[in-house]
Image (cartoon, rainbow, N blue to C red; front, side, top):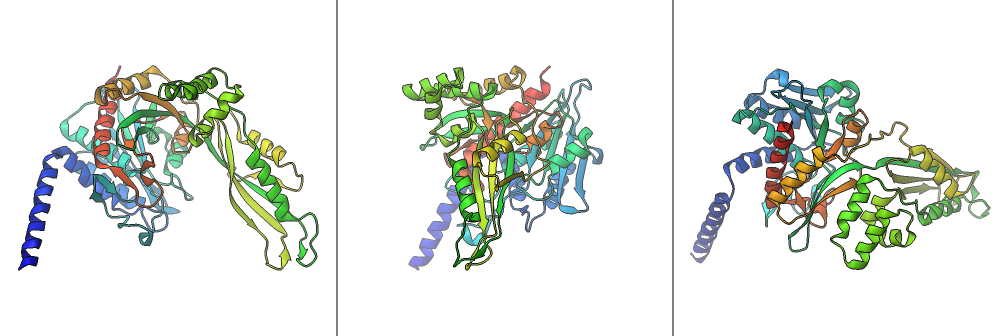
Length: 469
């Protein structure tokens, strides 16, 4: 009997809590949550998922909202049938105004259920967070874009500019990338004056208080280099010189000790000056000094103590994989390492290859480019037409929170659009905890409040851009 009453009381408390929670969620947010849930719970990993299925589900929702077949383009290739995507078009009222493009990838990194606290492909709301693989990267963005176009269509909203949306697969790796394919094969389908993408956002302190918003204006170049040394090897009882393992180890150590020179651009100079306002006096002075003079060695040393800023102000290269030898009782005949570089805009892949070869300083060690067709993004301009609306809306929706311009030290699909003449900006709006919600890691999460507030910001910003003359 006691157990019965205890259970009944627990159920009543859960019901009351559910009702109270529901009362704080707007009807449009509930509709968004349903779309977001469906997308998150559609497995889109490379190993076992299907982006094509996810695109079809979102396309069905859009068709039900009134989009015609001509306004929805599903794409895939026979070689990669599960890596498909969707392009949707909401026509604008001014045929002379160039479109804007909303970009997001719908594939996610792998997630092993045995390692996770919760099922990674079930959206779980708990303690003020949504948990699931892709709850943040990048299905939050994709769901916001799809939901926005659905609401625009059903509400009868007529933007001045045509609004396009491209949901693609392959950003997280694999042999096929939808954004790259569209740029090469269906450039006219995604033609736009500029694109809005992932990469921006905001940062929260340990107490959940917003620190700043950031819009990404440009990103570094991703490139891997194969570092290889070979020799005849031999019996391990007769050590000889040179030894392939020692040779490659010595070369890698020299790469680890080398520091590329500071290389700033308009975005990173602005970022240093903006961040200086948030720093203690000594650090702020170094940020300002480096922005004014990239050759200031002392300022660069202080700024570089922050790993993120170190990656922002210069090219970085780091060994990420190493393999050598063929038997425990034999001298290695071959040693191979992968060096991953994030190259500052304005420097080239060939230049970095030359520098690595010089730094390794061993003619027996070869350095070759691992990705021959690496895409180099075009210049992303810091224009007031893009920045001013974002800053003004940020002041309105998040009073007192500064807006920064930043350069991504990672790599997004924006590089594929930039290379075909569509400058791409990482849009702000969603605030993240200091750990970025374990993106790519275990128990990926995003604050429910941050997601809903970020959605409101992004949708309003899209309308500002779409209606601006």
